[in-house]
Length: 210
Image 1 (cartoon, helix red, strand yellow):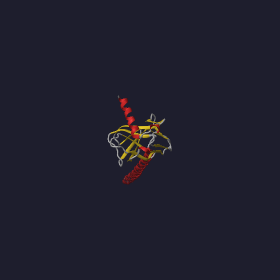
Image 2: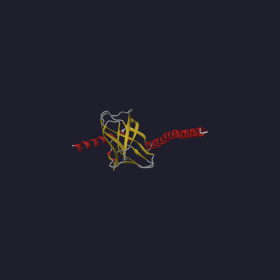
Image 3: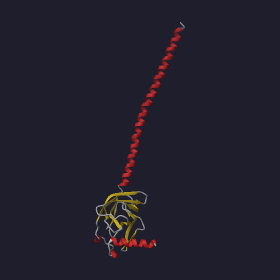
Image 4: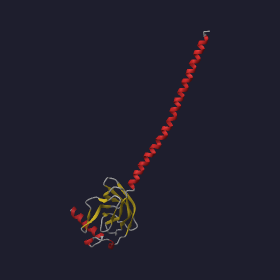
């Protein structure tokens, strides 16, 4: 008669172990099921963040356009040229250009303007108002390249990089080089073509260096 209680206790203990095992298995299963879900969500959130960053970058790249851009072809013995076109601000904020460079091997790059009929380097940044455009043209504002080591000829292409006041840059590729006759340019009271103007500017720089 004493053996029966021991058998009963053994059965109860075995049942408890089975129940405990089932409970642990269910917990492990629940944890394992939730882990893949968390891992699956992580890439989706990362992709969304990357997409937002790419959109911001695209907006910045699309903010400034340079329409009808052209570089004046140079004579073989010339050392000056200029870049013309229309800068278009597609953004809701003013854009300020403080400097520029190009694929042309030029010793001096300046943004020029006309003041009282005289051409000179701009003292302030070139501002393109929000949603508006600014024409760079002969007799007006333009990008001037001086001390050019290797003349650019008609049919060549030039890459232009402009530096903005916030430190960022915008690059414009494949700007064509074309022949622009002296009669296409008006320098007010100066009465001579862009090559003569460039020569005078160059002489002024030499005098200042001395």
